[in-house]
Length: 162
Image (cartoon, rainbow, N blue to C red; front, side, top):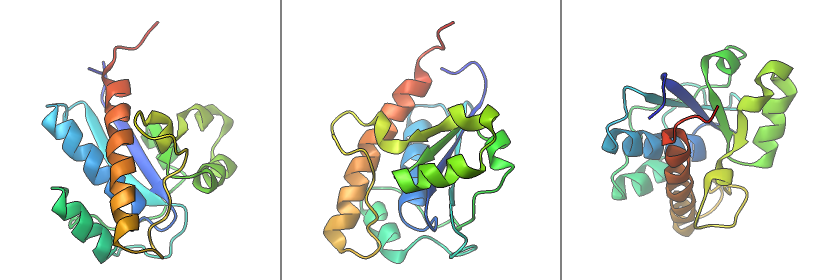
């Protein structure tokens, strides 16, 4: 269990498919592990295309079938303050990581990670965007995110090594 509260931010392009799905999956895993007081999660987009909108209806529907609730989430854009507010900023793909690196201060670069770096069952290095795809694409994103979110929670649950 972490010594202090850990804040994690999940990031994709518009904050309507991948990052809110990652947030909901991770929040459920954290709650199921009884760690909601120790770990908090949020999500945001690198672009402000959908600010204030709920997640994509297809993302909400597929997530709900697996027991994840995205209904209360609203899209927002990454802000400069997020680099101070969050202990870990997790990008869904390399483009998001590059966009975050462009605006991060050198002192916060260590907080930036790729989501799939926490995966254990999948070799993919990026979470593909399901927006222009079909049901199979949304299911694939859920599979990838469930695996990576479990790996992330395991990584955060281990005591820090000094």
